[in-house]
Image (cartoon, rainbow, N blue to C red; front, side, top):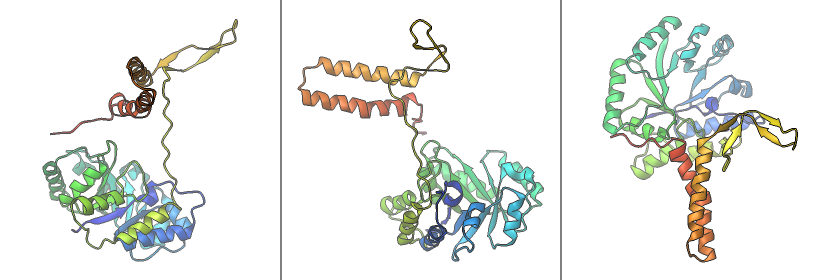
Length: 319
């Protein structure tokens, strides 16, 4: 199976303050060994590394005029320019990859406008978007339409807004997409290369051409020395309201909420939890079984209810 793999981790990920140049160098070398065709880098990586590893192509993210000077001193395959940066008049003297959201019925006009701003030097396009849930047939028609409309290579970068990035990447692969972008470290906004490869090999028994698992393993190991781990924000449980502003009761000295902002998610989960606990307490169960059920309510049912129902993240399937 032929597919061009691009790693965007070195731009999308947050680097550790003490990330060493040798680890970044070995990380890129591991990507090349794994069969990744392009590594996207930015000014941070150039400042860390005096010399870039060979054996892999480079996409340089240009965001200012300073980047134009950097481009002149290196051999990059593409200068990546976001659509939002077109008005900065960044005009590199190498081929340009334009990154833009997919807007149906307007992307051709958007591409034409971008070419007028850049002097017609766009030789590749990246659609960085949440393409939504599509059946395989819908995805094939989607990719065919783009390939028939845009006469240059197209890189697809699925955004993981509704946890569909992996599904989207797989269906893009089976639909004949030219190139797909991934990250090696777990960056929640994008699809992970390891999950993609393991799913192809494990579920579909497909091995991408020129791909080497040992190289991906090396990249995963070095990524721990380079990137900050994403931390989930702590969730407040059993907080019926949050006060926007407070005052002090002159008689008692207690803090009084002036404008309580009720949060239906927290309030709902508290009610949901207490109702189940009351139901368990009324049943004739032995103490060990009762404690186990209460623990299940606290650590399983609440999260399930909050995530899929109260937070509105459960989108369902599209026929």
